[in-house]
Image (cartoon, rainbow, N blue to C red):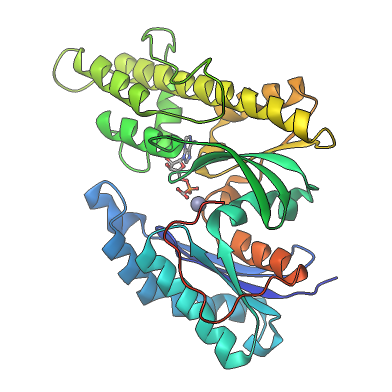
Length: 341
Ligand code: KG4
Ligand code: ZN
């Protein structure tokens, strides 16, 4: 059924996003406003700029999606917003906006964990049943989770330093490829020789599912510095990118292998490996994941990149899932900059 109709708001990083989604998973309207241009001169996201920008844009964006959805606030069954984890200034803006709508129109408030929203997206796009194994790889997060229910997650591993996307971005910066770096590194890597530089595979062979990428990043920096001074030759750039990407994917795969073993042992009824987050857009990574999933008899589900990167559809959907379970939050719920699953 179309019940419930939920407005979702996402403001935890550098995207201001709003969406109206219904219980069938139909996206009635959505809008994402990227702040990329505002942060680009600084080579990364500046929290203060992000918060001010969310504040400036969120009302108009929300009004726009409501109009496009042809819905009034009175017709909503709930209002969902990311309540964390993320940059606190931005999270406050989105959550306060949702609280105001919920209060003014007497609607349930749904305080959504941003990671849970990423985790549940596959149920919107592919109706994946619980339980499933999730690899979440974004600019801010790198985790392996067993998703058991709407509000039950088992974290098998996380990064002990950089997130995967962060490693892509930092390497891109050191190679002069701009921000965000993932897509550019992938393009250069496609024409490079991954075997020329012997980059490390951090934590490979060690037990567990934790990640580490800072040693790899340092190795790329040292390799880049060992080249003749001046601008990179195209072949060098391609080989550095290819070597880095191969090492990162190899390292992700090694850690995920342990996750797959643990998951198939503890949840033999599970049938799916889901990948989410901006790095899931990387086609070399997708190919590697597909092979690993199939080796364990699991299907790989990768939501479209538009729903893998930060958006409000996933927040509205997580709100829908919570509302269906009766998981409604009080209006004084606090924003949480840190909020592990
Ligand atoms: O999920 P997302 O949009 O935002 C966060 O929640 O962080 O992920 C953004 C990250 C960036 O680090 C970006 O470089 C990376 O995803 N990314 C990629 C690719 N496209 C985006 N990394 C590798 N290959 C790509 N094709
Ligand atoms: Zn995210």
